Length: 196
Image (cartoon, rainbow, N blue to C red; front, side, top):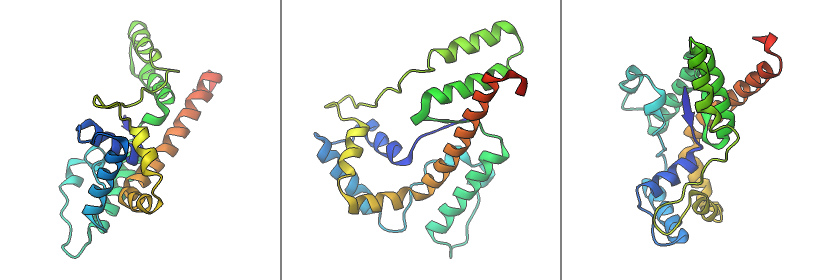
């Protein structure tokens, strides 16, 4: 099982979590712009790989002639391959209720007793249908969404931001497609149990 989040949202949320935001949404957005611009062209967000690569893949050495983009692109392809190879059950923060339904279905098929199955269903049913809580920092009520909204006002920066997250976005887009297919399959089974 793997739970993923849109990379831009995850990046902004990470900054807020570290309590490195400024006093206002606008100042926080400017700080994020400066951080990403400082890294410069050819640098890419790559924190997702620690979750999606095997230890052997993470330890791979690359030729010195390869650019950072070559390395990150290769790791993105390995990550996508691992989602398929290991039959990942994919949850997405943005579709939390759907994710809980998929996980509940998967756990229901793993448990070995009726009592354990009922406990697993009860655990997941608490989350099915509920809204995902909005991430609001403890200081000044600055939310991830409000910072993203502010960043989106700067089209030039957003092009840089999209470039910065493009390989993680490629993975998340692929995973979201897997997630949607898994959700559709679970719904078909729930509608017509004969399909199991």
